Amino acid sequence: MADVIEAGIAKTGAYKYEDGTRYVGEWSSKGQKHGMGHLVLPDGTRFDGALVSGVCSGLGVMAFPDGAKYEGEFMQGWFHGHGVFWRADGMKFEGEFRGGRVWGLGLVTFSDGSNGFPRNEGYFQDCKMVRRKRCPEVVQRAQKVAYMARAQCQQM
Image (cartoon, one colour):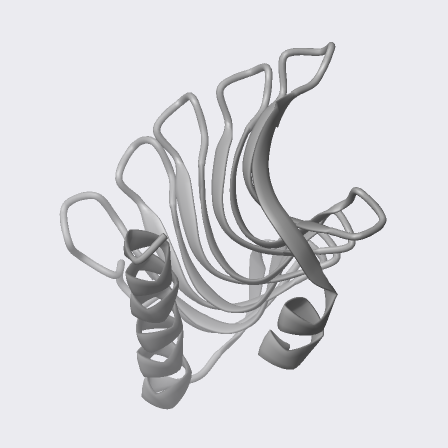
């Protein structure tokens, strides 16, 4: 992914769009957001991380106005791969995402630090648990990817 990004970077700069969207970061020779950048949408949603051809792709951190946050992998603008999503109420999901949804193995942790009883760990489809299964390797990978996304954004 890094090779795809680096190959297309032409310049660094900032732009404010008519709708209020603001972007500061790297651009392609075609004038698309491409590389590492900081994007703020009109509703206050913030994205820090990698963009390819104008969309979030690679590692990044997205913070929402209500306090929810996602740290992890993106593909074509969606949460996709491993990551950690915190809801505004403090509940979090650590695991796999597909097309912007909780989809795959993972673990739910409630705001009080518990995982529920029985434990909310297993296979999820479209944000619903369909099968309980221990998956510590997936949870650890999600935590590692979230850490890498945070660390990458701190270097920007």
